[in-house]
Length: 259
Image 1 (cartoon, rainbow, N blue to C red):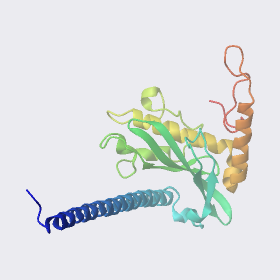
Image 2: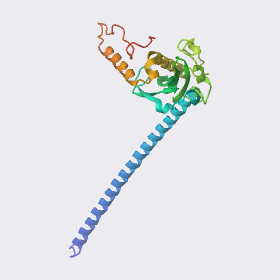
Image 3: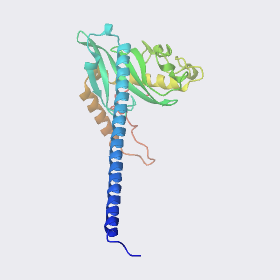
Image 4: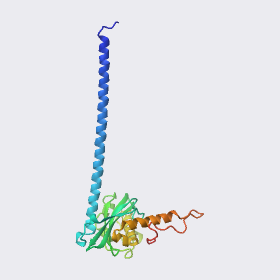
């Protein structure tokens, strides 16, 4: 069957139209993908910022609860100082501490401490420690413990967290009752309170080892001490059986009380 004179031109126009349609569809899909990716990215950024803002708000509220405004005359958020990473405090990266002062004298410091021994993962606490080494207060600022059981570490859920108030390293046995110590455990939940008791004790150990630098908010001394301790550990040679000798010092240059 022969083609009419107009048919080749019509076929060419149809093919060109199909190309344009495909191109428009591809462009539409590309634009949709870009817009969708942008929306997802913005949503993720907004969500991350919201979570960070909520954590900061919880932390700020905890600071005020631990060291009430009546006990200091400075702005705690303006008295922040850098803390180096610390195995004792469970800090894998640099973090922040705060000083509460009155008439220019430091009356307490607030330290973050993280324990990975919770029932459902990490528990982050803020521990307020007075200049004399006694606990001013403790608050849980982040955790994923079981509602109705482990979440009793929150001050709004129970008074248990107040058992730490005014305690020192030597005033109590830093274990839960079940382990022969002086702190209550929860009915049906021992792992969580055990983890928190241990973490608060670690904060006190860190404070006593670095009391002068912490009361001064001296981040440089804290960091230098940690570096010196790490260098000392790195230069220790292993013995034939693979152990270190002499026994490895603490991460802070051997200036922390030994367990």
